[in-house]
Amino acid sequence: MPSCAVRAGLIGFGLAGQVFHAPLIRAVPEFELACILERHGTLAAQKYPGVRVMRTIDELLEDEQIRLCVIATPNLSHFDLAQRCLLAGRDVVIDKPFTTTSEEARTLIQLAEERGRLLTVFQNRRWDGDFLTVRKLIASCSLGRIVSFESHYDRFRPVPKVGTWRERGEPGGGVLYDLGSHIIDQVLLLFGTPRAVNADVFAEREGSLVDDAFLVRFEYGDMRAIMRSTMLAAAPGPRFIIHGTRGSFVKYGSDVQEQALRQWKNPSALDWGENPESEWGTLYLPNSETTLAQKVKTEAGDYRCFYENVRDALLRGAPLAVPARESLLTMRAIELALRSSRERRSVDWVD
Image 1 (cartoon, rainbow, N blue to C red):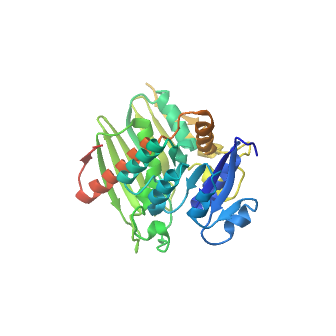
Image 2 (cartoon, helix red, strand yellow; image 1 turned 90 degrees about the horizontal axis):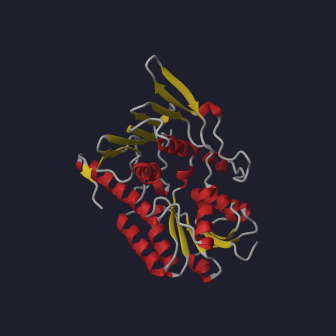
Image 3 (cartoon, helix red, strand yellow; image 1 turned 60 degrees about the horizontal axis):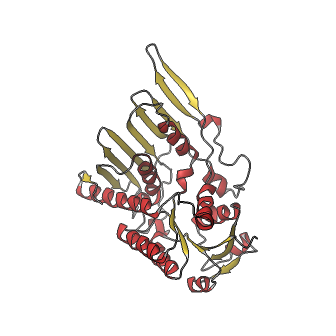
């Protein structure tokens, strides 16, 4: 391993640590997965026999050669762990959502700035192939002025996993924090902050202790961005529906990377992130006689880009692709959505 490599310590080896962070860190040149903090069990040692396994945050922070701390733990622990790592002089990546409140996020941003440390949030869905395609399509103005944007993130999980931290009812649990933080981040990246937020955040499944569905609408003057999620979508619906003054775009199917990572496939494979042609989106362009429908090839997604950017920021001074202040906006949007749902009204965006 080159002496200039970024030595990373992965804190947490649940779903996020196993499926996303560990394999992606290992797939990026000039990164070293130096240690994994797994409080109990032997899974980390089985999966990565050459990587040191630690049991406590104190033990990890005692290793002064660990430069980057990657926090992939339950949401409620993000703030405390990130604060400890920053105070110890480490650079920090936090899995989404940033924290459980915008106030916690602001505190961490201020601390990172005071200490001169890197702080960013793992918004990997910015590198979904379908989202990269949508970004490119909107930038090309092929649809004209966008008047309606819909993003759906649906699953079918009819029985709540009540024992898991995401569904126990603790702060930061529920689908709005879990999946909403992805698609809200994407909409903010595309269109910026809205004038107002209108939301319905609720539970559909019997016995659910947390919200498991939401409908969030961002109001942008003459454009609306609608974000939906449910755990009771047995029939696949569209991932994106976009209408503009010149045409429309509809995309079914989800990005292929998560499933590939769950199957322990190598992110360095030549065909990584390639979407099957059967799931390419369709562009509808009407003319005076008919409406032309043409397939649009889905861009190849690549979550490695997140860690490549972190590496370049640490070693070469590159600007962060996901500045912490952008993820602060996502936290603010979640809070406004929850307030709108409680008060049953639209709420203005207030910083």
